[in-house]
Length: 64
Image 1 (tube, rainbow, N blue to C red):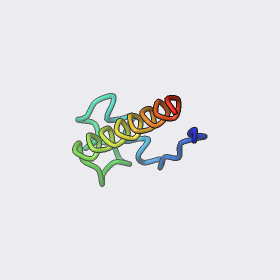
Image 2 (image 1 turned 45 degrees about the vertical axis):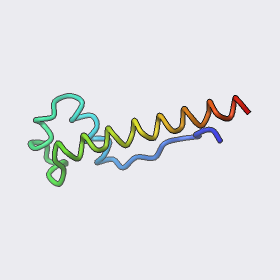
Image 3 (image 1 turned 180 degrees about the vertical axis):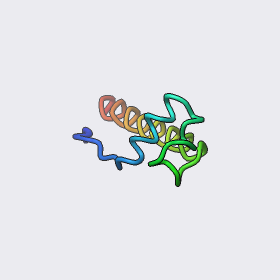
């Protein structure tokens, strides 16, 4: 099944953008008070993990 869209919380999107810009800004940004750099790193791990599994699933479907 192909992915038709992605839903992401606005605060997580801000975390992704700010963390990609400068991880030190996470502690300073007003909308990210509840997050830490570790949360950003975990979010990156989860997004890559999801992308990799989705890609592998597509490859397996092509082999069948």
